[in-house]
Each structure stands twice: as structure tokens, then as C-alpha cells.
Amino acid sequence: MDLATILLLFKSSLLVGAICFLYVRWHGDHIEGLGVLAASFFLQAAATTLAGMVEAGTLAGTFWIMLMTVMGLAGYALLWIGLKELTTGAKTTRLWLAMLPPFILTFVILFTDSMDDNRIRASVFNFSAGFYLFVCAMMVFLDMRREKLSAKIPLSLALGLGALLCFAIVLGINGLLISPDALNIVFFLLIVLFFIICLFIIIMVKERTEADLHRLIATDELTGLPNRRHFFSGLPAEPRPGDAFILLDIDHFKRVNDTLGHATGDKVLRKVAEMIASDLPSHAIYGRLGGEEFGVFLPGSGNDAALAIAELIRKRIENHQDAITTISAGVAVARATSVITEVMSAADAALYKAKQNGRNRVWLHAET
Image (cartoon, rainbow, N blue to C red; front, side, top):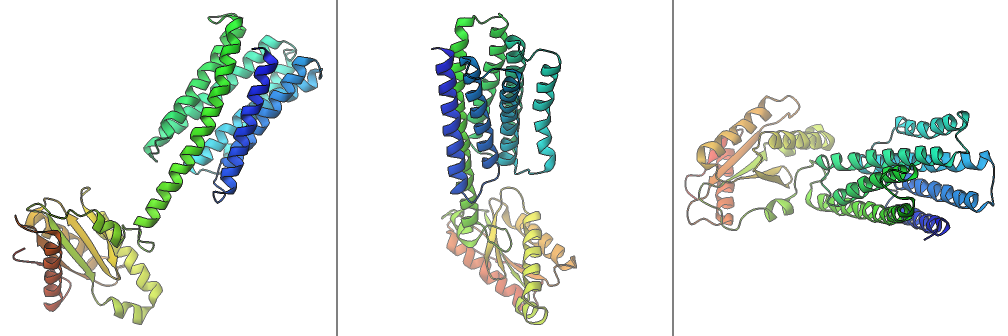
């Protein structure tokens, strides 16, 4: 496969990728980073077009060589900026400092009289491209700790392999390890990799959209806790002996709304929800059941641990100035023959007892 054909395929793959990014962005509520990624692919496609024209002799002169070099490297810099915005949500003016190296490198090549030396210019270009791809690969891979999306693994691998191919091209240009005849194969693999990179970027966007939708469906909008539907879907139909259910209710919440206003009531709900979630063990299942009522399921906790956790929550809310009010809690623990509805009913009965006996207290149901 000759160089002209390779450049045509590379340009085509980049244009297809750019159009795909713009399409997904247009239909995806203007997802951050995709517009920059489209610009990255368009710039690289333009640089590849100029390279083909220079190679064919249609364009000649230092200006066109300098232009295609700076456009190509700027495209790789935009790839990093776009992926940074897309993966981490970061969008600051400092990100655009990544655009400086392409211009600096281009002018260094120009003023050292290396612009017309294809070997030096191509080596610098492909080494820089490999560096950008490697940095992109590491950024996507390390971001897995913050946001676990399965598409990030193959995407980071594709970016990393792209970096290796660029470094291999540098070696081949300088007659090391790779023969000049094998360079066309390496270029072709790089074209395929850009298709793969584009594909997994779009898959990553799709996975994130689905994850956001799932969180929206499963989360109470006001408090940020799991909502009633999500909470109950996580409970076992037949709890094991020792599993505990805690039902918590804000005392005199209607009075808060009536006297201080619904805005203050919403603030109290958010603060109470925050304190409930902060005092729970990692294996707890919890959520807002509706209104001023919250539920907590503690697998294998038993009476003492469940009572201690409920009491800890009650005291924190009682002593917290932003909570304004207090809570009452009912605790029930499953026995050998319990079903979840029986445990919940027992916790509800215990909550009723707590309110009957003066509120701002935790009550344990004797038998479940």
C-alpha cells in the first residue's frame, strides 16, 4: 500500500470520527469534550490532506510544511484536551496550555533549518504524537478510580498502543528495529486504531449516559439518597436472623414547614439525610422512603449494633444546629422465620411507640 493511499485512508477515518463526535454531541445535550475531540480529528484530517498534497508535489515550500506540522500536532494536543474534558469534566483555561508545545516545536524545527529534512521533522512529529497518545492513555486509565466505566479499559489500551506505534514509526524512520517496508503496515495499524479510539469514546459516552440515567431513576432528587423504589429493590425477601430494619421519622416536620417555610424544611431534610448516611456502615442499605421518613437495613447487625447506630444518628441530629428538629426511630431485628414485610411492620410499630413515649428516642420492637 503506497503512502498516498495510506494518507487517504487516515484522512477518511479522521473525518468519520469527527462527524461521529459532532453527531453524538448534538444529540447528547452538548456533552463536554466531544466538540474539542471533533476539532482534534478535523485538524488532523486537514494536516493529513496537506501532507498528501506536499507528498504529491501539489504544494511546495516551507510554509505548507510548517502549517501541516503545527496543525497535526495541535490536533493531538486537542485530543488530550477533549479527553480530559470528557473523562473528568474539567474545563479550565489552563487545559489549553497543552496547545503551546505544538507551536513551540514547529518553530524550533523551523529555526534550526530542519523543516525540509523529512527524517528529522517526521521523527519529531511522531514522537510528539506518541507522547500525547501515551498521556491520554494514562489519563483515561487512572480516571477509572473515579468513574468505573468498562469502555475506559479498551480505550486506554488503544491509546497506549497508538503511542507505541508512533514510537515505532520514529524508530523505522531512523532505520532502527523496523524496516522501511514495514512502516506502511504500522501506518495502517494506526489508522485502524483511530477507528477503535473513536468507537470506544462513543461507547464511553453511552455508558456514562446510561449510568447517569440509572442514578437519576434510583436517587431522591432532594436529598441525594436512594429513593423508595431503589431502597426496597435492594432488600432481601427473606432476611437472615439478625438482620435489622430501622425506620426513622423527623419529629414535628409539618410544624417546621408551617412555621419556617418549605425552603427551611427542604434544608432540614437534606441535613438529616446527610447525617443518616454518614453514620452507616458500608454494607448498609438505606434511602428516603417519602416525606420525612427514612429507612435503613443492616444485614447481620443484631439488636445491640442496630440500636447503637440508630442512637448515634438520633444524638447527632439532636445536637446539630442546622437540623433544627429531632428524629424518632423504630428498630426491628429478624428472627429465624421472618419475612421482610414482617420486619418492616415491626419497625413501624416500634417507631409508633417511640412517638407515643415522647419522640426524640429509639425504640426496639421486642419480637419479630
